[in-house]
View 1 (cartoon, rainbow over the protein chains, first blue to last red):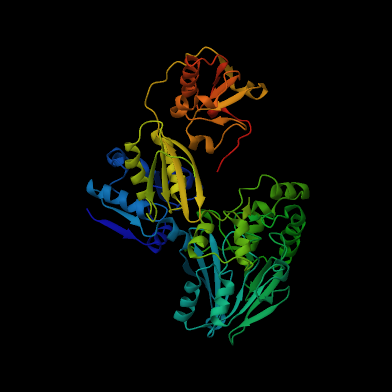
View 2: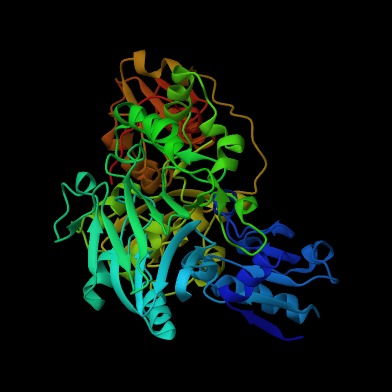
Length: 375
Length: 183
């Protein structure tokens, strides 16, 4: 039997198309418990590769023959070994090229909507890490919001679309993933914006992203309006695009809200978070479509793979927007918080430009789920 | 440098090779001996620790120097549990309140990754040739990982004329007090 090689893009298709898949994850149990490839109809078996060194006979009965089987490990070496062993036993299986490392870095661009006069809005879904980046395209120009560090994905996409990247925004100083914003701006000559209140320690040049800032993309003048919305960080800023879409950064997600503790100031910022979610956002039109910078679980994906929901619906359905008692809200977002994201302090240092780790070190820092939310 | 009986060079090898090589190398060791695995694959740390516990070896710890990880694994024993026959014993929780010498007879690498403050290290295998380092006037509390080696060590000391010797039970596996490391 042949051993097939799948790319992260192949797996992403199966997630988005809601297909069945059997994943044999051969990482150790802790790594699997912490983080895995999520799919609605995926089944899993976790057996560490080092328990299979003497053969795979014992697990054969647990591996289905009527389903596609994908062997996954951290980088790929062990999954190739196990896939070959299964193949020698007559099973047809595949392994994931580049392992969980490549899964963590894969981005799937999905169109959210057509805008006026031929404009387009794309969401870049990083399935393995739950990060969401955005590109607004209009008449030869583009703006990017919350770009992750794989800058070539954005620059190639812009090239493919024949547009020039003019504006690059970060809604806040990220703590869960390394931003690609500044590097895209450096490479393209675009303007890089960051909220000044999050940028007090950064060591590079940026343009201040402040409340009320209005940037127009292309001749058709797609509006990008900044709305100061502190709480996850003190500088956190949202965007209203074309009066139809609300990019909430890490303040409001589909099924959860932003956590206020990743810069170490939960107690100070909880009031800002409440003000943003319960007053500032309440003043916006309920028909705005919320586009967050993260999703936490695969159930937050829509059928087309996008992560988007009407603001009015979130006011009804999102628990974090429905805690009337202020003290209860305070305790929800400051007590019993989930573990902090992997290496979040180092990641903040990278995003401030204070340290410059190499590619492998960056990959290592970003391993694992993003954990920016509280539910 | 931490003492080990054998070294394995797995530098530059990607997963799964560090574990494949370790599995093979450890067959060359006698039970109770320590293997040092040199690796550059960062994932080898968690995997070696998890592998060791599934197959009954003892993962002692890892020291990082530059890009190289030095892992220490003590080969597990398949021998059945023997009765700790040495009669003079002291419960582990009383050890800190006693005056005298704590003698740790585990391997040097085990001692390096965590021992009771002030304990003296003489691995069981070296005890007979290092008796002159001990004083027959002292109370000597012998400790190891589970009480098995210290039982043998206490018997050895008694046969050499040490009278104030006690086996500490259970061993370091149950120790929840302060730990000193030599790494």
